[in-house]
Length: 271
Image (cartoon, rainbow, N blue to C red; front, side, top):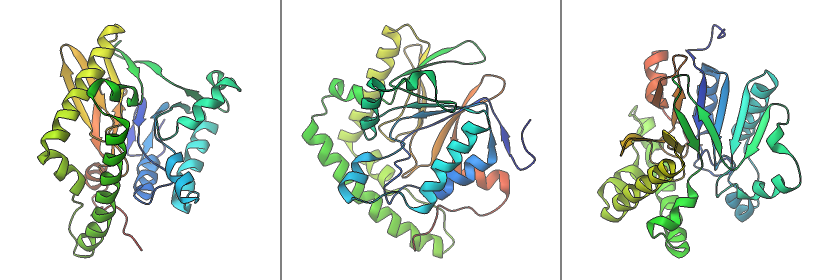
């Protein structure tokens, strides 16, 4: 049974691209969401901890980000199953698999490279982070690095801009998404990525795929394959939930919180 404070009782919660360790991570928003949801299982779909950023800046997690880690560990201790599918920004954890049997679970946490999820309606999904599809959409390492740099700069500008908007009582605006939606190259990359992911699921004979990586949340049907992307927590703050009846839904969390709590919710301000 959900606690009285929980606003949503659900079976499985899918989250990706939280990027703990970066300045653009909306950890406070995620904590509020996790406190509002009661679930049986949490599937973390990669890039949860940003080892690249931590190594480059030689700085650990800030207090709200540490609270996210503590919250997930507390959920595991309470009996909630935590599945951690690793991504490219936390790929360093993949080396641990060779030395320790995380696949058997530690304090109700499973660390893996991919995960098979079956919904209450009997649909089978392959869950991967999605960085493996970069090679199929003509994304070289050099271009990927340049893209990461531009995206990081947009997030920093976005953070400053939305601090001003929040002081004026205005809702969050995604500069990164606005740029993506107007860039022909970005739109082609997103389309090709989605196609590659759906084709992968079809080859493996799954009903669908749940992934992250490109920070573009979506629920699509591509050639009879269900393509679900969880989005991210640096910008859009989105999640996929499987309800108790087996139905899947994409949640835009800030809007969901505004709707269900009846308060004017904004992403956290920058001090």
